[in-house]
Length: 257
Image (tube, rainbow, N blue to C red; front, side):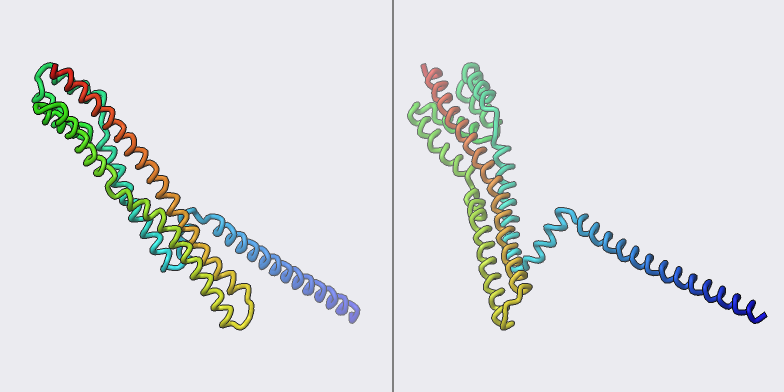
C-alpha cells in the first residue's frame, strides 16, 4: 500500500513538473514572438514613410530658423515663376496667322482695317504691329522707330520680376551654407561645454547643419528649372517680335508703293 502511494506521488510530481515546463516554454515563445512582431511592425512603419513625410521630418529636424527662410525663398520664387509662366503663355500668339490677317486687311481695307485686326488680338506682337501701323501715315522711318521703341517696352514687360527668381536661386543655397556654418559652430560649442569629445553631440550638430544645405540646394534646383523655362519662353517671344517687325515693315513698304 505504501508502495502504491509512493508510485502515485512520483507520477503526480512528474506530471506537475511537465505541465509547468510546458507552460513556461509557451510563455517564453509567446514573449519572443510578440517582441519579433513589434520589431517587425516598427521596421515596417519606418519603411512605409512616404516622401512627403520624410521631407517633413527632415525639415523639422533642420530647425525653424534658416529652414523657414529657405522655405520662404521657395514660396516666393514659385509664386513669381508661376505668374510669369501664365503671363508668357497668354502673350504667345500665332504670329503667322496674325501676319496673314494684317496683310489681308491692308490689301482690302487699308491701315485702319489692319489696326482693327491688331486691336482685337492679344500679345506683344499685335501691340507692336498696332504702333507701327499707327505711324505708317507719317513715314516708314517713323513707323520703324515706333516699332523699335515699343519693342523695347514689350521686352521689359516680358522680363518683369524675372530677376527676383535669379535672386532666390542664389540666396537659397547661401542661406543653407550659412545655416551649416552656424550649426557647426553650435556643435563645437556643445563639445566645449561638455568638456570632452562626445560622438552624439558632434553627429547631431553636423546632421542639423547639413540639412539646411540640402534644402537650400533643393530650392535652388527647383527654381533653376522654372527660370530656364521662363528665359527660353521670353527668347522665343522676342524672336517672334523681331521677325514680325521685319515682316511688318516689308508689308508697309509694299502698301506705300
